[in-house]
Length: 553
Image (tube, rainbow, N blue to C red; front, side):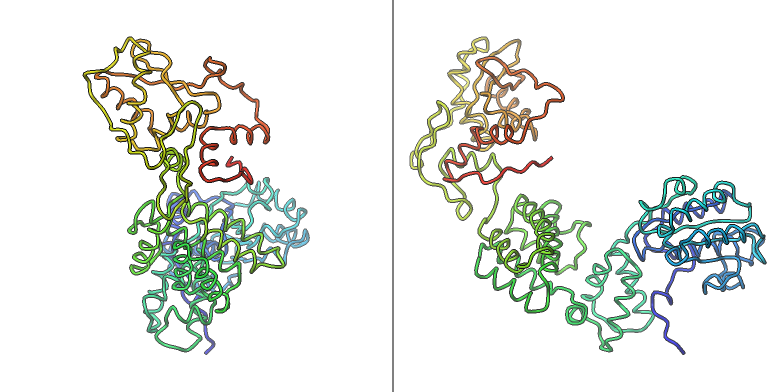
């Protein structure tokens, strides 16, 4: 007897069997229950997510001969159901849009559609890859789609809905099929392996499900390939050896070398992957996927449902995540995505890959701007992160003490507080306020305020003015809840409720709001950024120069 591949043998037979498309299944079931079945449907989604399977189930439900009316639970045993499963039913016609895409084929369809079905309730046309029809064929379909005979139903399936003309789409009920979650694919693969009585190890299923990229059919086809190797029990090692799946331990080792700032080890780890048969693009894709997992771990923890990892992989990801900041991971992922396309079009992909990996390793960790700024102001830096020269950095009229000078003691006494009606008193007390902010809110927040000063106090509203060149600092003070934190601290310090307002000044006057609709040129944005005191301070502290400015909008 001929072998039946798993994708056909375990094809879903009823709405409840379809994996990962519950909203669509439920909607179609309700339409059948209430007798509100449309005359035309458009099923949209990537390959192997259940479009044609759902179309067949819909056809069986409408034409099942076991009952007197359409049913949401076809028997799958009557003559009609069996013939539909085999693709041989005379009243359910499956048409390949790629090979029957001309006007003549559609004209024949229209001529035959007027005749009633031979034995079933409806004559159903399932057109797969409908986007392949020519424009003439689409136009030939319009009339019958607009006013179809009562006994005719159309179900179109496509992977490229943008190629289906709007006049066709407007005559259909459209359903978008989602990519199937890897956990759901893994559950189905386990069920099939158990039904087939094939021995396997747990480390096989999840990597295999992830390789399917959201397609159940691809997952079953990959499982067929692994089974055909003829080795039991099935293990993840077979995926690496026969299907080209990256070795997770080698990928983790490469990321660990990057996190440890080990330049030589990074190159050796990359070479190990290439020697194992992986291409530069595959390595890039794997790094993006694994670093995304680390980013999720840093943001949501190792137990997050966003992670599709085994228990051991979660522990390993947790250990690796400690080597990175979220900012570094975000930067690495976006850089790797750009690198992927560059590698595809390069004659020297290995050099590009090695250069980028070294850039990650040698850049070490990234700091938030306010954290780096505050460290530069105090002349200190986290060891192993950013080397800072021990020199005094000036910002406007504010002098910064040398690195080795002891920090001034923080005073928070209410006995010598200035009068709240005396803005000059608050100005005189401002350095003490900055020390208190440093102690309680951190050096980053204090660093943002170092070039600002109190300017007005009116009815409990304290206005703090930044120089025009410090617009970036002002915006940072207004973000992430900093305004409320500073306001609360000042209210506590002065023993009364204070409200805060931040503004920038031009020639001693508050800056007016920018004109709406006037966008800045790239040169203006670059000049404004480079002239910002915060950026100047960082450049001075790192003895660095700006090589490029990227717009994140």
